[in-house]
Amino acid sequence: SVPGQTPTLINCLAEAAQPLGDAPRAVELYTETLEAEAQPSNERLEAYYGLLTSLDAIANARPTQLSLCIKALEEFPLDAQLLCAMGGYLQADNQLDLAIRSYQTAYEFGHVNPLVWHLDAITAIASVCHSAALQGLGEDDSALEVLQNTIAREGSSPRVRRALMELHVKHGRKDAALQQIQFLGCDAETQHLALAVEGACLAGRILGMN
Image (cartoon, rainbow, N blue to C red):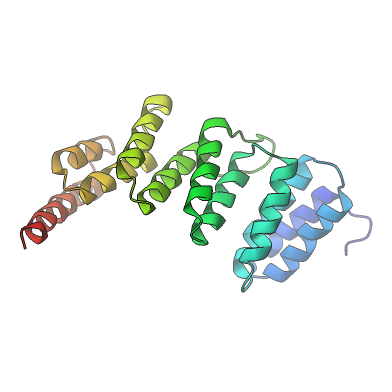
């Protein structure tokens, strides 16, 4: 423990332990914040984020992450980042129906606390993950609709455009895939990507003939 320290300072110490590779210490400190800060607060939400991330480095921690995420969502029910994390844990556990529901809630109703660190473009991340989970169930048309609706609602996003491109490639829609690349820019990387798309679509057609 860290006697006399505030939850904010304890979180800072935990955050410093993570890049040093001391995940157990980070877990210990974030847990201390949750024990010290009884009511929902920015510090408590940050501790949940940090604890879930730190547990990634702990062996066989998935059940702990899942139960912790459920508890966090009871306190912060529409937090987009927690909903995405829950979707990820459920998807990894092959509970795709529940994962889809979590991603969809994150995208449609989720919000972020601007006073607590969070991933950029979290709703775009939720959309792409939602689409991927739908594809896992073979619902590619619905997956396509999710990505298209995201662009219509929020504007162009490189992450969503790339996911849309990959889905078009999957179905051999070369022109549609190349159209998405145009929105990603015209640098050398996207030019190489265009060549890769053409090659993948050609290979798909050849395999389909055999």
